[in-house]
Image (cartoon, rainbow, N blue to C red; front, side, top):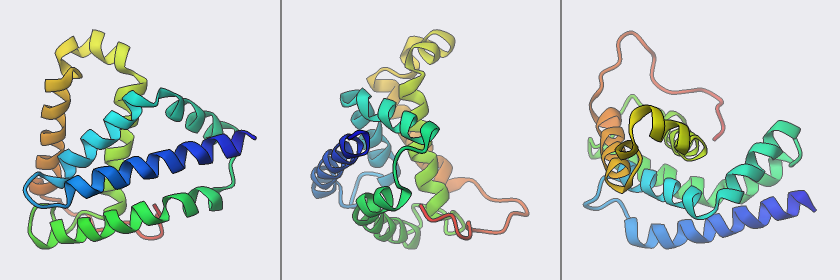
Length: 160
């Protein structure tokens, strides 16, 4: 039953992604900032999603193949967009898709699950609406402009 509830939440998340995707084809707005906003908005609207996901990971309560199946369409579309953004020079060509996506998901998850602590230690404006927009833009700059020093590009076998 727990697994089914989590899979249902993933299905809702995919439906929300499709609505986001219909509005956000990477044309104009920075994909990194737009996707960051989508992930943070999702966590804000559905806090139960991150709680159940955390529990599932801690308890190894959900079959990884089932999760991979649920995320496959979304990841496929994101890979295509990522390649387009990299080809256009808006994301560094030496950044791996997996690194980019894991960073956006991880930062969104961390910011939302630690909102109170971060607001108190970094200041309330850090994660208010304007702060989230600024952080999304800053993440876009990180992925478009930082040069690697002595690190080979890409992850092998990450499988995100």
